[in-house]
Amino acid sequence: MTRFAALGDSITVGMGDPAPGGGWRGWAALLAGTLPQPELYNLATLGALAADVERAQLPAAMALRPDVASVVVGINDTLRGDFDPERTGTSIGRTVAALRAAGAEVLTVRLPDPGQMFGLPGALARPLARRMRAVNAAVDEVARRYGTVHLDAACDPATYERRYWSVDRLHPNERGHRLVACRFHALLAAADFPVGPGPDPEPSSPPPTRLAEAGWMATKGTAWLVRRSRDLVPALVGLALREWLGIGREELEPAGAAPEPVNLNVLSKPSGNLQLHECLPSARLKLRNRLSQRNERRSRTAAVS
View 1 (tube, rainbow, N blue to C red):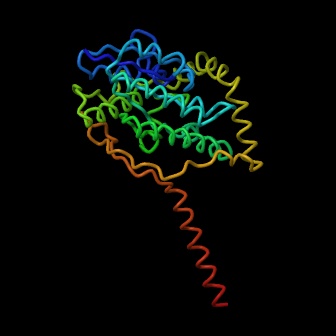
View 2 (cartoon, one colour):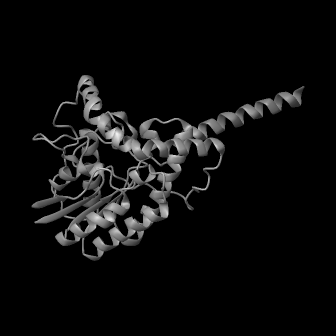
View 3 (cartoon, rainbow, N blue to C red):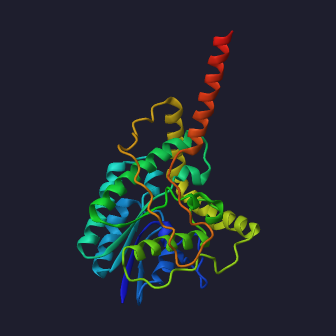
């Protein structure tokens, strides 16, 4: 028997991947199906912050004495007006430390940039990206200190492909949840943790139609956005204003280079998109190269004249 406690927010709840009998399924359930005699306890809650996971979900997980536990949280923290990366990292660190001390194999994630997922304009995307990098730097240190099974979703190019995300662009769809489950399965196998055959990367249900997606956004999706907007919209407006005024730079870049992505190209079944690349700002480099070439041409022209 393998007891799996899944801690986190709506991504771990499974939002975006409807279960056949109602409710949500998600990556944790898909991954649990690959473990020997699995018992899944999904303790995640919608909208959870890192502090919520430590305060409410960790005690329940500790009582279960799990063999495997996942701690996937942090995106909601970056969207709050009172964001504090040190506080977020401390809560995640204490949660992971307690689970590791209890003997659990712990799964953690470097989370993707929400600005890229939302397709936000630069004034919003830049401060959100800085916040996410600060959280990821803290989680990287937690993973290094406690030896977690650490998934680098931030540098996985598949993470930002539209086909892996639901209509709200914040939660994975079924294909996206299967991708996360496949990635974690590969990492567990590489760590010699006992696992069975990996999850099927291909969806078992047809994707929702545009009409169904519009209907979801008009009903359940709108209600979710209204609840989140009570804090999210003022926070985003504040970030944009601070960026425009040039006073948002106190959210400094974490020191040190980002760690190299782990090679996750060993999956039980091919997904059609497995190749990982270095996390490099290629578009920015290309732009700088073009500007350099243009300046060189201007210099040569001025010298000739």
